[in-house]
Image 1 (tube, rainbow, N blue to C red):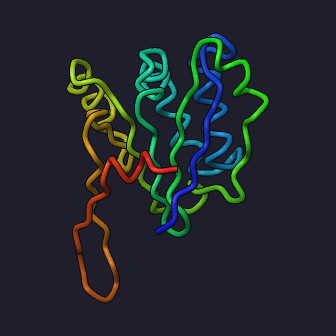
Image 2: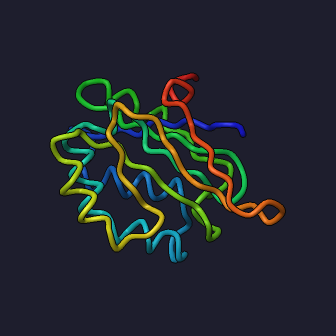
Length: 156
């Protein structure tokens, strides 16, 4: 599986809410069911962006088909330069049903954020120092577990 990485300018160039809106604009078209799911977690995502967890570890989207997507935010003076270097994705990974998203979070906030995301199926939070483990259902074999190494996510 290939990986596509993007950076999005955050605070002080954009507020945390506007940063999440820029991220959702990369991931799903306006008016789609995927965008509605992403919009529903705006406040939660804004908290994680404000705490700069998304600077330390990527937001990871595993679409139903296509390349995995990693999105990091850039903060401070580096965000000014990053704004001009934002590149749209070739396709919207959250346009089709079946995608999952993993948001990074610090261990001190993880229980509260997990509770807030409980009703948002397919959007989870992980300790920003951990890798990502998800389950994928394949038609031929039933349910097979696989994991993604956090070190792999760091590779350009």
